[in-house]
Image 1 (spheres, rainbow, N blue to C red):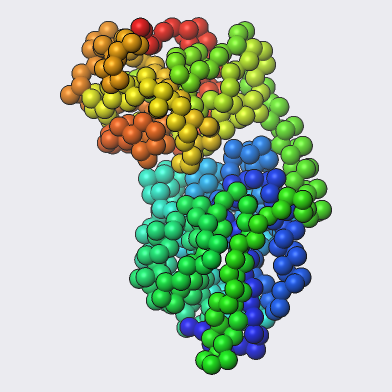
Image 2: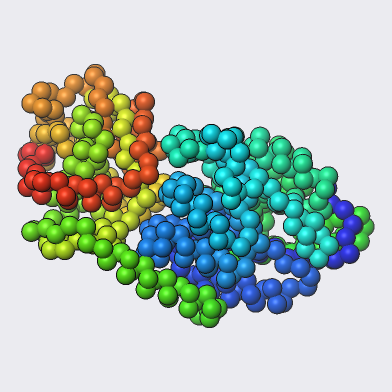
Length: 477
């Protein structure tokens, strides 16, 4: 409910889904500083989640401290979390990180399983006063319930949680803003179904809304991804009814020629410190492990072995595209594993029908699959790559017709039965129908957090005989 205030204008600046693109952060901070100076009236600066991404050296090497420092130096007034914050950092790390954040973390649909309350660093909503304007802010993040349960959190239905917070805020605020790390489809539904939301600042689906979308009385915004834009929304007092109305909404392109010196210096220092920390030696190996994306290769076999040993499944299936280059001979550092396997992807175990396994392995023999470009759902590689297995032998004819190349698949010397179910160790991204989609058709999926697959590689490199095993063929033509 918008009430009369003495100030005539309020400028809102927002970012979302930066994903640790530190090369853009100094420039974005410079634009935010410029807009603060130029604004008529108070300015509110907000982030809508996925600021952090452990694919970046600075984030991995500092476990997110680099991001918190940059947010503090940029001067955010409030943020929410995305799945990259909520699902890729242990709870104790987030406790430590957000204790040093100089603005509130606002999210209404995450609660601790034990207490039923939000984590101590999170608030379901806040009221911020800017130049006499009382702004109510709530937020919500994508409810990956199965994953959050493994971390000791419950992710509740965001629609219901937001509706409750909007009801509480409407009577005490001039303006109600939702920080939605839920995606554009959900944002539209919220605007249609929940009365009292004035502005939805959105993220998660990386949508670019150069002009705000207006549904009913709700303004919906989204600033793309990777720090390419800073969103700007100017509200002005209506002379007719005294309400704050959206008068100007746009996306400001981030020019990398602009820098904010203090932020730039902090980024450079964090990069240096992160590289130093990631120099830790994790293994020494006596051979190079090549990687191929169209055929079987030792490094991909190592990943399949790592997943099988970690999950304890009957066999494992992974994609070679998770690995961005060969593993060199000699000393292997934590930073090297991070650079070669940057994806925050977790292992899982799923019950799959033999028929669906046959289908995925047939697809792996086709260039249209192993050269397919993939984005999102934790994948930080470039192409999907072929499938690597451990525990299976796949007998195939490379000259056969598509989807009829495999002659037989054996498990422990016995034929893999198309009508039987098997417990398969694989990767969580497959369960979201990414790439080899039949691997998402299973049941009883057990996700394994917080280990990433690069942590499993580290374990496998220390297992005696693991390197020799990578040379044992699993695909036999």
